[in-house]
Amino acid sequence: MNLYVIDPVRIGTEQLPGGRSLGWAEWGPADGVPVLFSPGAATSRHLGFGGEVLDALGVRLISVDRPGLGASSPRPGRTFDDFVDDVRAFAGLRGLGRPLMVGNSQGAPFALACAAAGAVRALAVVSGGDEIAEPRFADALPGELRRLVDLAVLDPAAAEQAFAGFGSQAMWDMVMSGSPECDLAVYQQPAFAAAYRRALDEAFAQGAAGYARDTVLAMGRWGIGLADIAVPVDLWYGEKDSGHSPDQGAGLAMRIPGAVRHLVPEAGGAVLWTHAGQVLSTLLERAAAA
Image (tube, rainbow, N blue to C red; front, side, top):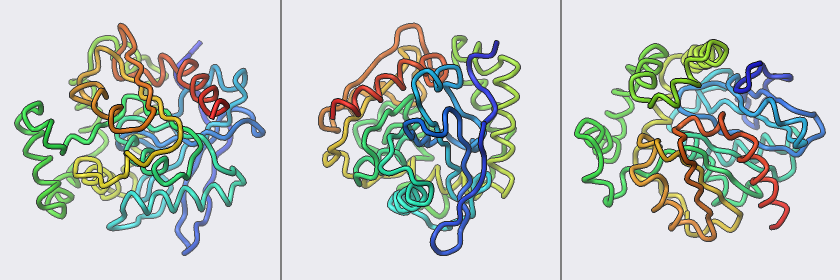
């Protein structure tokens, strides 16, 4: 039995105000507690998580393609605030009320923007990409990454052009070459690898512009009011994950009022899939307590 990924049980698109399409996929009971999912870099709506626990927890997981990725229309020059607007419009169209949210990897700052704007009731950030353009990380980044971060801050247009040279195979190779063995045991499992490759191919189906814009936003200065977040936030990192945050979310947790940081022993960046039940049950409990 594959405990990491299953195919979506419902899939479609919504037409947002202005005419753009936003692609979505759902897992779990249709009448479950809505949990929006902001997925990681260059992946589409098809790569979900927690399929083995959603029914038991009563969670309706809804993954959305960010603009220019998968089935979602492009939105050149978009910002984090634009994503918040899309989430609010989508929640209204789908009758989700004010949902809960999970943000993974490069999807984390987009999810944090939703929390800062009060568009969601509670948030779990899992293996979240940190604001690596913060000056405190200047000496903690490898040279080439430092160069790209500086470019994203000083010349976003040039950075966007550079990131537009990526494709699905390059992303796969980068993840496989940079992950610890505990993550490769997940990523290279046949069913997961097939789902992940499909999600990468779909994310780049319109070209690399959507990924490039995502990456410039994530690598630059966020401008997100983290100190103004008034909803519960949990941060989850594996103790063997050194790729998403130089300090594994310690500084990020300090910037968010009331944030709870979980450092998972013997785990890496695949925490979203290896500990899906723990992440989701904690999210439900935190939302209920709030």
